[in-house]
Image 1 (cartoon, rainbow, N blue to C red):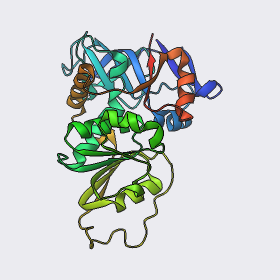
Image 2: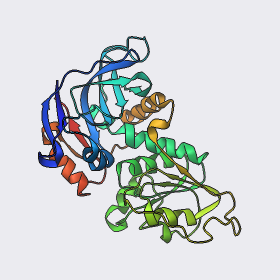
Image 3: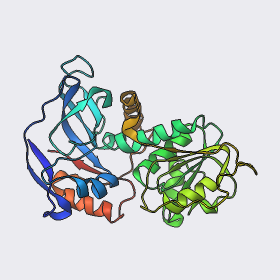
Image 4: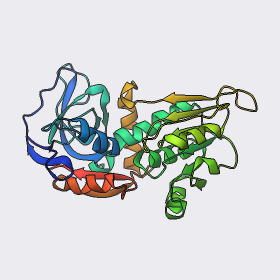
Length: 309
C-alpha cells in the first residue's frame, strides 16, 4: 500500500512510499483511510523520534475494509473515525475496535478526521472538570485544534467560556463565534477566579492559570506547547484565602477508556454542524510537507487535513 514514510532527508521529514498492508489482530478492524488530520505533537516530536521508514499518524477517517475477526466493532462498509498511536498516514490502517467511532452516512471525512485527538481530548478534559453548567471555564491556547473544540464543547455544556490566545485582536471575533464570552491574552489578565481550566500551553501560563483557580477548582494539563518548565512560587499550594482543595490533573488521551462512543458522538455533532472542525489547511497527502511546515511554523490556527488517495 502507499503511505507517507518518515525520511529525515526529505522536506519536513516525510516522503511517499510503499509498505506492506497491515495485518489486523483479532480485536482490530482494517480501515480504508480517506482523510487524516495532523497534530502539532506528532509533527514536532513524532518525526523527531521515529525511525526512517515508519508510518505515523494518530487521526484518520475512512471506511471499514474488513471487520474485526472477534466480532467486535462495526461491520465492513461502515464509515468510521479512528484513533491509534500510528498508522494513519497510509491507505490502510489496523485499529483496535474500542478506538473506532461510527460516522453518519454522507459526512465529510476530512471534517471528521479532525476529531480523534483534538475533539476527544477536549471532551475528556472537560469531563475531568466535572459539571460545568454555569461555571467559569478558561481554555488556554484556544486557537489550536484542541482549544477550538474545548471552547465549543464548554459552551454547549453551559459554561461561561473564557478563551486565552496570544493575539486577541486577530482571533477574538473567531473565538467569540465559537462560543467564548471573553477573550484574553493570558491567564494573568483574568478579572475574576475561574472554576476550571483546560490548559494547552504549559509553562508560565499554567502557573498563572492555577493561581486564578477558585476554591475547589481544577486545572487539566492537556498540552505543553511552550516546552517550558513550570515554576510555582512559595504559597501557590497554600489552602487559605479561597485556595482550598484546588487541584492539577495530568492527562493522556490513550489512557482514557471508552473512547469509541465519544468519537461517535463527536462525529455526529460535526456532521450536524453543531461543532466547527476548524480546518485551516486542506489538500492532497502529496502536499504533506507543505502542511507540516505550516503547522511547525505556527502559521495555522486550527487543523490541517490531508486527503488520502
